[in-house]
Image (cartoon, rainbow, N blue to C red; front, side, top):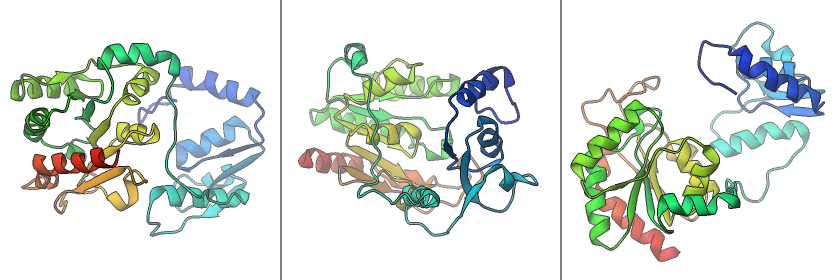
Length: 279
């Protein structure tokens, strides 16, 4: 589904909605339960439509679901909150709530050519919100420390002009750094991540992709809560910066000192040593 705010993109979404309607699903569950999700839940045409019973949204939004669960506050982790919604169908939580996804094995050779081997430390620099990004100078310093310790470090980023500019600036700070090409196909990107020895990034989508693929991760948290959003499981290390003074609705850092700047490259190197020691 296209996700550009303020645009319906009916030429793209309607064929997909029609295809879903043809499946004649018995049930659909909308974990977000926002206005857009409520409309799609109704249009898909499932007999049982499960969503959150929350205030807000357009008038009548609740009527688009015929089964609702009252949202509760203060869940320790987002995964636990989402599992709560499934109680509307009497589905109990599993013993483990760790994410699990699988890469397309047919893309392993192509991924190997991009990564040039296995077990590299993949560092993902960019995020959709700039305030979640570790300073570039710290990435450059970490590269030097890890490389001196015998680790092979490579860098990835998202697609876009700003992200490409970040990589160009990083290359100036660390001329020897290996920067992987931008990958436009998600299945191929997942295949590359699956070959990593460790994945390091801020709180961003690829962090959770890597965790779901079974790759040990080191996550750098500052503006968001690690207790709610960090990957679950013993193979993941979390480092937390200083207090974030930014507006919760701001995508860029508004503070005099960036909270993530409190996490030093030497700390990330130490965390990496702990991960390697366990695996």
